[in-house]
Image (cartoon, rainbow, N blue to C red; front, side, top):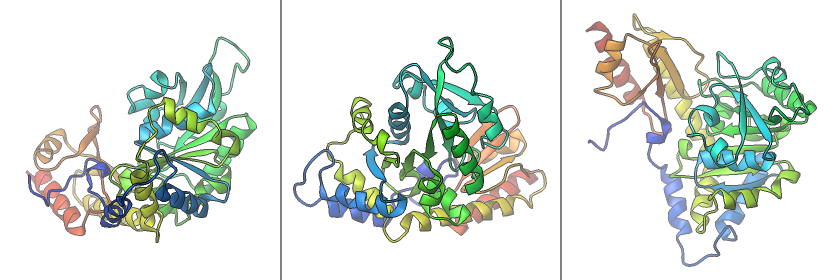
Length: 345
């Protein structure tokens, strides 16, 4: 396969950003203390406080599923539950890890655009105190959502306030938090700390890292439990400096913003291009770096022989196209031309 090959299936397909790769190399300097007492992790803590607030604490982990499970486990007890959307990654795409590893019940709320509403949250708060129903104790929202949409500050703030009124902690699955912040034109803390979110799964892998995620805690009460959950969930890295160095690189000189803004811009270019092709329907808002479209199954099958991407909904024929930090304008234009060619076939 050519080194210039590009896919539109996932932003995980992209390589490592050169600045992140340089940071890994710089961290590979002699010996350093294991399990997070190293210089790179100390530097990361400073950068996290700068970006998420003076009280924010960071706990690097290996992957996004691990970040979500660790954060949610720190928020809940064994008889409690997490409220999320029916499209949430923790519900659909984590192989049952929240249930199997953390022992959590997930109460799911329907959504048409990937965004939970206050009304949908309220509908899950019932039979409180009833031992026959797993008790809602946390709310998990995805920003940006699995359908490529982003909560506004007001939307997310309203959800956080209502969740706290119900006595729930709030977790943000931020695998693409950078894309949401870039889309909204706000700093990272504006859609997390400033509106009262308790913990964040901060994604780096989809934004130019080799493999780095973190649990960021802004509620000091939770911070005491996260280190133990991280260890028992097998997410404590011995050579943590190499994970921390990647995250620190993303938070240095706004690399996270540069990468996310570019990926978002390429998704907008793609949506604009395919929107002019007869027979292609772009059904959802393009807030971040994902484009969802419907086209005839035969055209999809032919395209998938030339480009990698996923069919999102077999019943409707909806597909998902993802752009990443290294997607180029020529990548997008070539893909649009191929779609046009297959639709005309």
